[in-house]
Amino acid sequence: MRFAWTSPFRFRCRPCEARAIGGTPSRARCTAAGDIPMKSRTPAIAATLLTTSLLAAPLAQALESRIDAVTVYPRGADVTRVARVSLTPGANSVLLEGFPGDIDLGRLTAIVENQTVEVRSIRMDVREQRDAYDADVRRLQAAITEVKDAIQAIDDEIAIAEFQLKFLEGLVQDSASRERREAVSGQADVASWQQAMDSIGSGAGTAMEKIRNARKSRRDQEAELSMLERELENKRDRREDSAVLRISLDSESSLESNLRVTYFQRQASWSSSYAAYLDTEANRLRLTHEAQVSQTSSEDWNNVELTLSTSNPGGAMQAPEQDSRFLDLYESRMGARMARPGVERRFEAAQMLEEVVVSSARLPSGRYAVLYRASERASISNVADQAQGVPLSEYRVGVSLVTRTNPRRNASAFLSARYAHDSETPLLGGPMRVFVDGAFAGLAQLPDLLPGAEAVLPMGPDRQVEVSATDQGGGKGSEGFLTSRNTQLADFLFEVVNRHSRQTTIEVVDYYPVSRDERIEVSVPRSATKPDEENIDERPGVIVWRKTLEPGERWRIAHQYEVSFPEDTMLTDPL
Image 1 (spheres, rainbow, N blue to C red):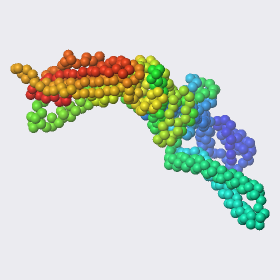
Image 2 (tube, rainbow, N blue to C red):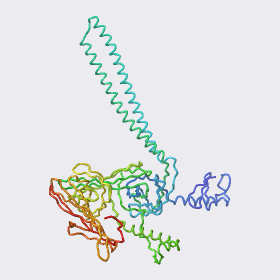
Image 3 (cartoon, helix red, strand yellow):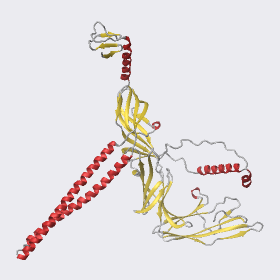
Image 4 (cartoon, rainbow, N blue to C red):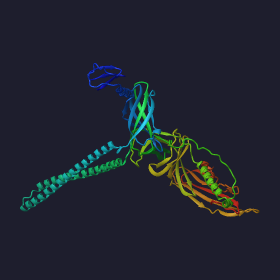
């Protein structure tokens, strides 16, 4: 006996169409075999309630999504997928397949562009897959088959052309035998011979050209086949799980909108690279900024809106907590080492730790978090060890050219280009290719540049500036009547010659030693050439002489200083 649900607690008996109120068919009119006792009503009512609840739950829409935007960090990336969703008033549920199985649900966000829609919940189910790249594998297999067929067709062309050459070779041999017989009999036809030779030569040339072209095409096809086979091997070596997202939404009305789901991928990174093109005649510099982006995730990023960020989402988000610091007295090192080795070792460990903390506090921090947006959509492959360049920006500026030398360390001169970085966008330091007047000069490092900062870009050796450093002896001695002191004199002569055909600004860099002990005195004789600037770049004791030299001009610098210290002591470092 079968019953169809019409309304709660009202059933219709199909065989006789007898109706019953309250769930019991009429015995008088029902001719179907069997009855519906009271105990049979309970399962029917339960089934009715279950059916009612299932019909009330929203059916999940299975949606297709595509990767639309990616924000890459120095370590990791936020990937955003977009799906078009149609919603009805009230509760809705959508299914999104094909997500990487290793994404962190805690860092996943879902947003509907229409602000009247609220995301209620997100659930992720991971599906283990034997091969997460079936579609790509089939595509590669089809491409490999096509290339192999093309190679076979080329081999057929080569075989046909070689057969033609053999046929022509046979004709030549037959023709030569016939011509010899005709020549012996005095019936030789020279014009006919020449015509035959021209025809054979033309045919042979055509066949040989076909063979050459076919062999070249075969090499190209073999290279394509090798690349496809490597790509197929890489795909098959991966065994990735995929995730299915079930997202519950609540909408105020019927509408269509974009659903954007963003998740974090660790297998991505980027770095800055630059190219500097210097025109020394016009004193102009063109600086190009490019991002080197790489990723080895389970997804290709095809035609995405690409953003490069200098922030580090996985880094620290607040300053370290500071514990209390207590002071105590300890004995001299020798006594403490004998009497209290445990205390001494703990102190040395604490002292070592303190030194690390102090030195680390000098490291630069507090950089800007900058976003660089690619000017057009980009595609980033997930092939390992394959970084892809993405152009970001270009700067054209006027520069001042300065040649700097440090004669005591290196008797060479080096050109630099200087300008004010007036852009509102900071530049993250990175490797820089340098071109001077169209010639490649070498590789350098661009420093971090903040807005308004002076940029000093290295441009490589300046071989038109000659530099020499001569140690004129200096010497050691002692002074004092009641108390004796040791003295040491440093005496150097620096010479710089400008071999350029134009004026050249020269900077000569050196130092005066800085005392860390009040018993050490440093003095400069009057005969020494006074530097133009001291403590440059906030480095104590570092000095610079600066001068603009005319073509062929020679510049001499007397660099002298004297150091004195108690007789019974010695300096830890040479002058």
